[in-house]
Picture (cartoon, rainbow, N blue to C red):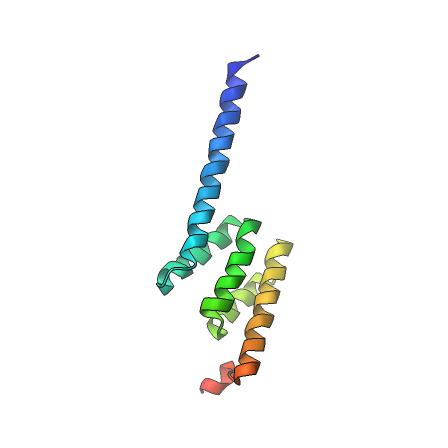
Length: 111
């Protein structure tokens, strides 16, 4: 048995674990009281393209942003090559639009 193979496997395991910790850290930041922190976390998670971030991102949009400021980036996400990103963006857009309809707010109502 070659000890080099075990080292490669351990290195890969450590790399995967570090990636998971980063994603968890950014997911936790989505709950920050600071808008800038939440925004940077959302951008970072989008860059990772990890499916474990999809639901927390939708929850963050629904619970914290949930207004027309999120619509432009979500519209762009509808053309993402990843199906899960496109689906999550579509769901988030529908959620925001339903919230706007129920409160009577639309992008045009502010002008």
